[in-house]
Image (cartoon, rainbow, N blue to C red; front, side):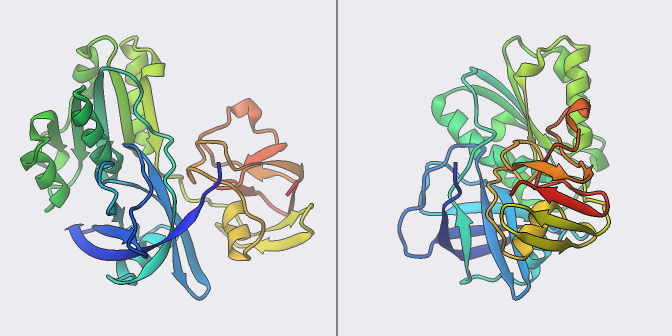
Length: 318
């Protein structure tokens, strides 16, 4: 699957909470946007000068409205700079590039769903609930938050058409979710969809084991990779005849995109889907993925989106 890019115009920017903004995007030529299904994401490409970014964001608007897309972006002050650029630099009227939608988190054929969104991980469910409601399928959406901050998303979910199927749990209010009790009482056949940080994902996997729930019923959207702590390394692309000095903290993909090198297909940018796998010809890999088992991290292959070189030279079959 290839990512095809289109021009989209930012038509509205809303402050949803102190660190989250929602961007409304419309086709720059006024046409309908491509179709998508609940749980899909897009890549947005934007920047200025040497500061160029390609970030993935879940679509959080209705799949049945092709006039506009919406993404909610949390400002990650310790991130790689893309979310900061979107918050501080982009404005209404700007035209940026967007991929057509990809979906690695599509709803399966189950008749009942438990949806769990931790923090900004609520976003893919904001499109999925439109789909579930239209299909008449049963669901419960749990929105888990730490801080009792002003939150437009919470207000929309708890006052709009989906309010009867939404429960908000806020640690600061003393209403933290008892996930152990939820999993203990989960009806047989309920599909579990979750999006949040690695701590939440690990906890849900443990609960499946504790309550003898088939882990195949658990679907996790990985939206983050821990920042790489690697030092600088020399990256050699054997087939392309290109050598690039990767900077401290850069992944293979980041280094290649910085020099506008050969295109690498990547659907998740979270080290989860395996799409950007590349064979390693020489060197030691700093693995930072959620894809390989420990015995597969053998310095023979890597995922470009999240892996880097440990030191010295890393030669890829690319």
